[in-house]
Image (tube, rainbow, N blue to C red; front, side, top):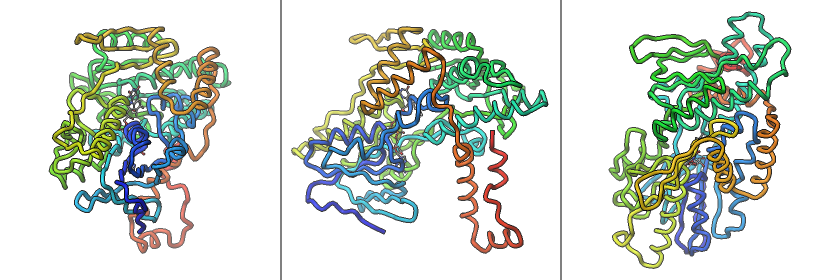
Length: 479
Ligand SMILES: Cc1cc2nc3c(=O)[nH]c(=O)nc-3n(C[C@H](O)[C@H](O)[C@H](O)COP(=O)(O)OP(=O)(O)OC[C@H]3O[C@@H](n4cnc5c(N)ncnc54)[C@H](O)[C@@H]3O)c2cc1C
């Protein structure tokens, strides 16, 4: 176990997470008289809003995931540690993380926790094996492999039923991520892959967007939701609402309608974008400080984003529950910056009582539906009304805004070039898939199951037979 105690006597700020909340908090502390240690389980900052473009071959993963230590290279008061934080001790004021077998205990004076959220399967975690979420680069690359793999398998199949199953893509969850994914899978099969196979016609692929709710894009309101649904239907996406997934397996899923009847959809390639569950680190904070969690595991922070009895422990981003603050990038960025400012003000003698409560500035929301089409909602200053628009201009606004927030000049340039290619020719430059991208998640899952078993049990199981490096469940996953 190692302990990278800071060598200087300056206050030590530890930040957990290199997403929007963590990275923007670290950058806000660039000129502060503190030492900053940012601990994250990924080496990169991830621009999640464009993951679906990685999954559907428009851009490469590096364009939306700059290495955090490169981003912070010139910030001399900051260092980056790779590690999965598994323990926060509020009394000892330490954060403990693990990288492979190496355990590191990092002491803090101030702590900003921005560990984000994962996919929620609403208690059906076993669905994850057959319907990955869309939260990480691994997810996006795996989905790319599954989509393209399904077309490849269909090309080889002579059985019409099997082909139909392989060419049916189901996206569960009609929020922004689901809408964007469904739209792009449809465009990819209809345009990019058209004419590339000899035995199948990719344009005949079915793309189904399912949701238990009665509307598409509920946070955008009825009008924009209906327009987005119409646009998707024009692209050939089947929008199925009031349809709750009650079972899901390798070959398909079972859906329960509003009237209680159930039906089966045969589909090999499924993706889950229907709900979030905040980082389990919130539970540790609740147990130690008594702070409450909401149903999604988010921490009900104080008005200054701290937790009870710990004025210098802040929870920001998707992990925090604050009325009126949605789980979006701006909520995390503003929360991270607020926490950094509170720490800086504390250095100059500001007490917790003197802090102004966190206030969220809503800059509006957007979602793309397809090439040249998006929905946009922007608050009108001084009123409670929102300006709403959809179509081409909303799409241009989406492009401009997302380009601004991608970290790094070269990444912006690469993305711009790839967008130009994808949107003008409908070609996609990122259609490569490796075997590992398709198998890795389930193979790792199977490995960790094996690890959980005792050594003698494993030995007994493999006695007399060579262990299979690709467990059965993993093989069955390929799609
Ligand atoms: C597919 C998708 C599309 C989206 N589209 C939009 C959009 O169009 N517009 C918008 O505004 N918002 C969008 N969002 C939401 C937005 O991305 C999030 O609200 C935002 O990323 C939250 O920031 P965060 O810092 O709280 O968490 P994240 O950005 O998720 O970062 C969490 C960080 O914590 C690290 N971490 C997690 N657990 C641990 C641990 N135990 N130890 C160490 N490190 C850990 C992770 O590696 C990561 O670095 C989208 C989200 C997704 C998934």
